[in-house]
Length: 118
Image (tube, rainbow, N blue to C red; front, side, top):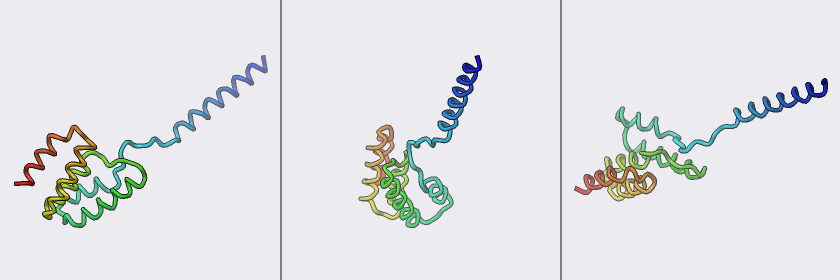
């Protein structure tokens, strides 16, 4: 009887330890945001596009170096920033990349591509 109680206590302690270990393991996120969200906010506040482009491009390299993906809208926002400084070749590249990564954005990206080619 004493032996069964000892086995049950050990089993409960092991189970509790496993649960705690599972809770402490960080889950890998689907996308890596880096400084994307603060840069969108800065864009809305009126920060110059050149500074944002350099930050987003640097963050994009960090994202790719870690083997992660940028979030939806990242390349589209970068394309809009390039559009505001007249680099239409980069606009098309960023919009095409957005379409490839997120096919559900194709209709909107095609619309933006038509607008930039006017």
